[in-house]
Image (cartoon, rainbow, N blue to C red; front, top):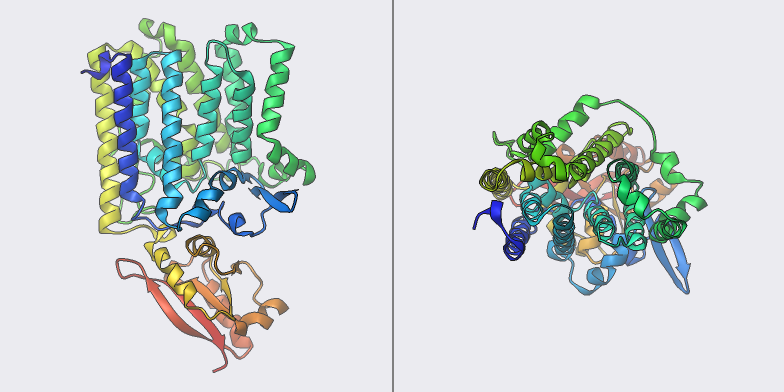
Length: 498
């Protein structure tokens, strides 16, 4: 069977194989990578920690927003799993992997309608083997898994012969609730639809459909809209700032997202290898071939995908803190890969297309292997340290009459998750160490921090020691936790008089 000549049945088989690879590759990383704080941002409300936004239904206070721009939809979706299954990287990450699989299958079902089975199957193969898509979905610290799902679902409902406008609009609203960064994509999506599919828009333009679209979006985004109406649009006041600062670094981040190198020395240690995926080559080739006469039937879809992706990227480039990390730039997926494969799938003959897709997929698979090798040989980076797996034992060793507090960012949330919320843990990373509350409780609290060399909030250990020194106190270290490679990482201590 040649990828360039697959039929409907064999296309589904190719996609099934790609999805099995996606799941299997994710399983290489799930148990080896420690838990990062943003990855479990949705967990504390499950254990009755207060959320930024909530709504009272009966006797229950249900979370609606985790941050001013991050919704609690993942909390709603996974709360039952988190409570029912003992906490582990598997119970945390397998749902995200399944969300990714559903997204890819919906994408296949959508693109086969808009283009053909060959392009649709090839797109799923490239995304399923794309190291940035795979790792950002599996770890889902962005979060990005549900954002991708909701946008793809919206496309799926809208691309039917009789568009399901109400359901498509609900999906777009849910994308907004999931994360306010949907604002980077949504305007471009609508604009590109108007420009490149004007006939489709005119055919379905009616007051009834406009009402369906507005109602659907309002329903999907209602928790987000309600929170902002109550807080005078805090999402936009706190986050919508135009800036061109750091542009060279933002361009670099997109570059390493495209070539697959973006998570070396961050997710995993061991340095960046001299290997690149061929995604940038595929996109460049598609730009060159865009006006080939054989591309004419698919050119509107190719333009739609290209300019939706570019609008998303330009929007994040112009945002004060946008485009600075992989969990931002990965939101340009699946638009750029869709553009490339639409053009290549029509411009090349079957054999040429099959070779091109195979070469890009193989380059992806090799890169995934390099990530897995470094995860095994060198271990994860500091934000993802596998020392976090020892946090339950550390928490259980703290006397019941002591409070537990962290004084470096990102320790409390993994600890809350891994201990199943069995102990209350406060984050005091940004608390003024000279405040009366801090001073009064210093001797009755067990503190958790990182060793000085691994601090996220640099200098917090030194500031803390200086503050308790003024009270005539010193720290007494109870336990030091190292990662699996023997590197000291977490410190548990209490304060006492010398």
